[in-house]
Amino acid sequence: MRILIADDHRLIVEGVKLKLGELGPDTEFVIAMDMAELREALHAPEASSLSLALIDLAMPGVRGSEHLAEVVERLPGVPVIVLSGSEDPALMKSLLAMGVQGFIPKAYSPDVMLSAVRLVLSGGVYVPPLLLQERTDGATPLPAATTSAAPPPSSLDSLEERLRKLLTERQIDVLRLLSQGKPNKLIARDLGISEGTVKIHLAAIFRALNVRNRVEAVVASRRISGL
Image (tube, rainbow, N blue to C red; front, top):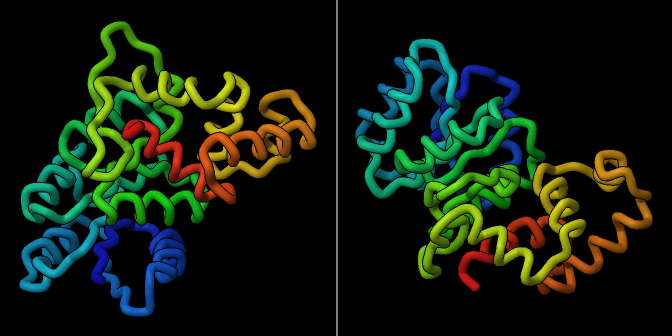
């Protein structure tokens, strides 16, 4: 498996490589740290063998999101995930509509990133959980964070409605923070509850989603749209 990583921060590149190395011992990486190197990688003969592309939204030499459109066009059939320090829901929606298969805020934990990558590699689309917080009139349809075999929800609200069939309001709040990679202590602080209460909610979430741990819960929440 060959993965393209385009980011101008060496620490981030090395961290992503280290975590994605868990995908398997045969995982190889192609690195680009600016637009010139990214374009070179896109036009290289080996580009056809790429399995995945993780592209930073802001790098030297790029203009807006034009480089992402170029990646999507040059690598048909190769899933593209955006890495970004931004958590702007409107930006996420526009990029997902462009054709990328995921948007991972850099504030998220390595485990969440790995789960998102596995979901995308399996044919799904990773939609950040914070988009569930958005309520709009006549919500714009978004790609579903699910496998390709499952039908996409008609809107962001429909995904939240599916969660509400399985979880309480507070459990959805806990799951949302969990998906951001936050530990129990920070979840408790953000919600104004005790860590013991957080553990009780997590146990209920695990039962409702039929999962065994935190990472599986995050992944399972993306598959709700297929229920």
